Length: 635
Image (cartoon, rainbow, N blue to C red; front, side, top):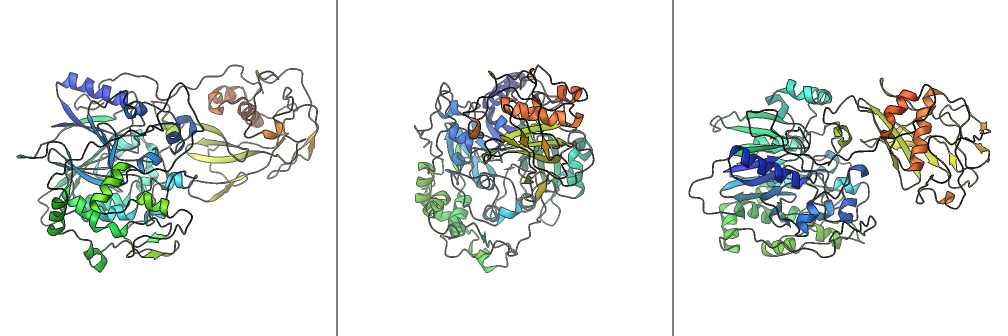
């Protein structure tokens, strides 16, 4: 049986299916199954798009909504796990798995299913130690914190996987098992991703719980995504009774032209297989039933047994009697029912894109029916029930709660990859490489704050320009802002920076509207106390009173004022030209990255480019091409 494995989908279902059909024609084979290793992006409507944790410029409806609405149907049975760029409100409705569209099945937080005798396991999300021992407390609508913590792996899912006794044929995870690079071609990996070198040297690349599972379950194949690069390895399992068993690890890229994002594998189907479709796994059902008392919606750490010597661990071990009980409940019929029902409310209309569509917290009838049959809890329903009360309440009498700062008994290594929650998608705009590119991004925050960050060689300097709403006669006031970095530490624009990082000087006068004299506050060493701006008859760049636009949400205090051309005192210092252009382009609604090349070349003369390069979306149409490695079925 031929199955296709894909790395990170990022909503490119049409392109993936077209590539599979191309490979079938090229190699004269029949593909029966598609496995996607995360970042699937099952976005149904605008509300789902809001719940996805990624930069706004990458938020696109893509094509999944057409499969959800019935406009298209997946030509192949598709099974996927969650990653760290997902419509989390949609996937959270299916904690134990379910259909997100006809012929497209989500594995849930963790799951084991069978297809024609092949046992396929999967665990969704990525590993972050600070959320690992908490319950599934998140629910829509999310804030900036829960939007990311919702896809962090929990220890209860790892514990459930460790209870499996029967080996798996295939295991899927989004992030790589920690240390798997030691068993492959590291030099080739670093040729494509040289910035992995520091993490590899410190043994911080990948997930420690995933490696524990790999060592425990010893699956025949392990597939991953997340790192946006193809990498293969063979992990031996030494020791008595293993019979030289190995795990074949394969990570694939994301769906882009000239990337190795898809590979076809020929799997041997077990003989005398009675199950011909997608089925529940009886042992996994028994594990869900046995560990139901460990399900929690606590924001505090919940104790999960780690050692087989723990009496609590022994209590949850699945026996043959528990498996037989599942067979009785399901009458030996474990075929997963095609009970997908379309929710009418989120139907997307591309002619009317509503970016302000409300985010609703709903449960799925698939989960409700499944939980009722097994008599287990729905984590999302528990979180909804806890609303308005103590969210640290655990509905399971046997769950032991710990203070958040208390040391947890765990064998998990606390170190994680330096990439906090995601591989920087901005680094993949160009197909030629991911490093040594200056990435400049401007974002308007809800507190009317314009944040400018310039990154060189993956090191950041954050400076801020803040709109002062308390002084109507001083529309723009420069001030130093501190911000949280990816690891939660406070950083300041005046802090020391690493070598090779471009600096932005904020020692420049504020632009004014009209002939108002604007005082400038001192900011980390600024020597400017008062500036009398000079007005020029020539607008800067292409700005004029007719085409200047100001965001009403972030500049309410300016909404009723008549805007006049913006001017700066002359001469401008070279290092201030970039900051000035960033401010002007933010008022015009442009990305600074569109003009960075021309700004850099003209900064010495103080000129402003008149033309801009339009941003090209990464999901531009492309066609399937043969792999760079002509020897295998990879595209």
